[in-house]
Length: 110
Image 1 (cartoon, helix red, strand yellow):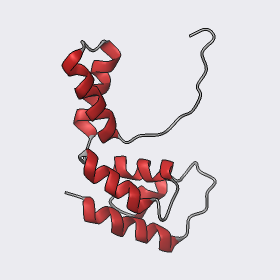
Image 2 (cartoon, helix red, strand yellow):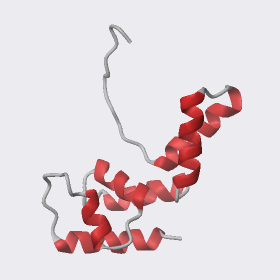
Image 3 (cartoon, one colour):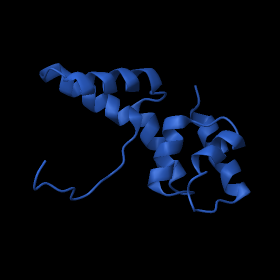
């Protein structure tokens, strides 16, 4: 890693990680860390990629993309769960926005 630096970052959802690793595993053998990651995302991925992207798109109207992805990955059930996602953030979020986020998320809960 000497001499390498990150040029840009773009957060992705757990569903996308799952799809990327499954596609990669078809052609290559996964190393230990990749296998652990794949096991984790298989257990905790709650939505398919298409649903996940739709939800992120709807949530981006209310919050930034990185928060929309966090919400999509967790699918909070109530205001307490949602507030936990923003506990360390310095972004003030109004109660109306939190309720709107929960309404959007509820449409995608299975």
